[in-house]
Length: 225
Length: 240
Image (cartoon, rainbow over all chains, first blue to last red; front, side):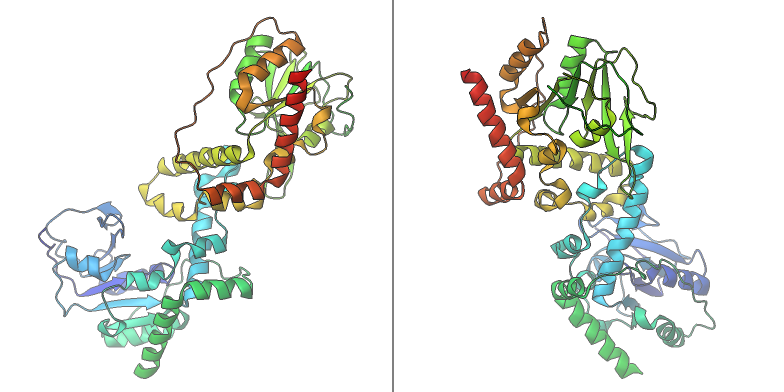
């Protein structure tokens, strides 16, 4: 398959629950609403979607300068004719907090979608995984590492840390020579939820690769400052 | 038979019932409801359910799919059939002598597996009707063993039958002997004729690995005990 042509200036990999929606809003404010598009590649079927719609054109619209979305860099390289000069950036988050946030985000969406009380359904109490059941599943472990398969942190122009969102965004703005930028806050899930230390320890153990990745990113961050 | 003796005066429903049929999920209750309608008449059989209404655990009564808050059934209603824990029904149905209460049981492991696949189908159907992007929500769906291990899904037969010993029921059928037990019940209730349904054939599934079967059996020890007691009672009545 011929790789899709483009005029991209920036590739932003959005690992779920790492402040990616807030960051997309900042990108749109900096580069323009139509210059930033959402691009996802599903990890199982490898289907590329633009703005959540299947995409099979030979090139991206000329005006598109930035893609931001859920994909693995290895799959993106198969789909797009990427130059090594096109910078790739991403954000990481403490692995345990990311898993917890992901779980409660999905649980909230599931509850809304099923609308049990409205439809007289009673399946969530029977069928919804608990946090630990969700976290234990291989599919949901080490997702940051899975997204970053095929690329090292050092190969990324920038790896932000969600816990230092504002200062890292400021650093990125200088790196990319943005004249000005706006900060957004969106999608705060799970902030007030209580998860026991035992549960956190189990989730940490099941996400050892992500813990290493995150600690490595923290060390890189320390070095750059 | 003296049943239904613990009415809650604030909730009691007056009635002309001749039969109360407890439908424990996945014990051929839908097929049995059709038989009841053929025998007693469609208008005479109502679907009665007592279910959890909200996350606070409040209960509500449903009659034929609608929330029911009245204090009496239609005089035409002779039979109620549906999902309700015995004790919840007992609080609400006006106490009278000799109202037979009946139910069906099933091999506990088979019942759990069947219940899982049933709920699994609803879960997938509800989500697939919308955006395929919602597939992401399938990551929250339990697998069979997670489902079977979860406390709310264990010992459901015992949960429904809490507060009533099997010996006090007018009839306890065994799903695995449906036709034979139906004939016995028909005789006891003096049914002149009744249809014999073709039970929904369960989709052919891979047999459970032995360790999974044993685990589900172990997690449903109360149901296993009930089922074995029901089988022993059945054996006794067959020999009588």
